[in-house]
Length: 342
Image (tube, rainbow, N blue to C red; front, side):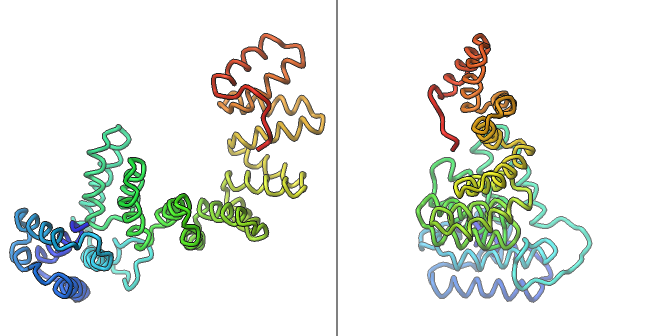
């Protein structure tokens, strides 16, 4: 990610007047380069900061020197970029910045925001390579959300090591979504301690997805009381997935009535698994009509298990034609036998 370093050096050079925080940050960056990569000379780009040839030359020198994996160097470069863009434009959580109100004017962060918007459009249109290039441009200019989205794109295309790097950069800059995504990546890589740490950081900042994921991690570790607490926090904040998971936890503990209450709250928010489970609970307690209603609602929205259970209910009620249609739809969705609650 030498582009960050090159961008930081060039950005300082194009400013006629440079504030002291920027100067200090840039001197720290150059000091790191001088101390670790003695054969890398940044003076050419400082003299000609708009020169693409000088940028390419410095990038090549840094790559050859092995600086691409230097996280401390990347962090120093980001400090320069955010000092340049000003505290008002800095990402949430960046330490050491003061609130400064300045007249609106074009800045590097404006350019990054434009590149980010174009990247989102390109990704939505299925132009993956174009989206990646634009995300890299915005991320290289210090845009934390672009870093996160670039991480997602890289992970989806199998470049997991690079994805982790970008998640970490965005998370270190205070991006809550990146913290949560980094936690998911680490959990899927069986690095559970690190995953829990990042889930807790994002949860402390109010991210309900992280709260839910943290609770799942704790439940898997059989820390059920702590898991229930985090499920409740996320559920109370409106996270339907956490409502469902809390319902499952309560149901497993034999607390069926509160479990059903949480399933209903999640179902009211369109959560299909909750609708299906409400049908199961209703069926077990003899409320056949209510079970059919819930399964029909979930089945109509595409839930395969609900399709199958609805077919059974209709068959038992003598409605063979409609039952056959739902059996076929369930089979097409991959369900052709009895299904458990979970």
